[in-house]
Length: 163
Image (cartoon, rainbow, N blue to C red; front, side, top):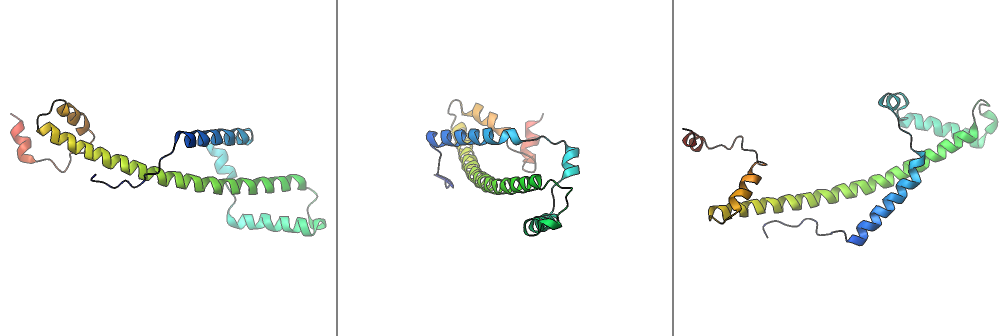
């Protein structure tokens, strides 16, 4: 075989079913809490930067250690709930991002393997077409549309084919 299989680890039907079932359960657990934001709302509310996270953490530390110094105008139970939800979501995002990164890397390797095999098959088909084996001319012609011909045109062959 002219190419190396970069990823020979394939998912069994049982593994695929387990992943889909787990994702469905995860979606079911989270979807009730999701809120859609418009692009304007995303811009308006944004995400607090690291400096502002330090401010939130410092206010929380003071609230925990010296509650008498905290503003009475704040619903501190809601503040704590927001803090814990944010912390939970951030941890979940980090774990999901690791899964996404692993899946993307895995997909890249499978895509590469498929593409290399497709190129080998295309070369084989061109060889078989040149041996006048039936059916391969159609296959090569259909596949040729996917290959960029700019920069590789043979000028003399091109002028000979035009009357």
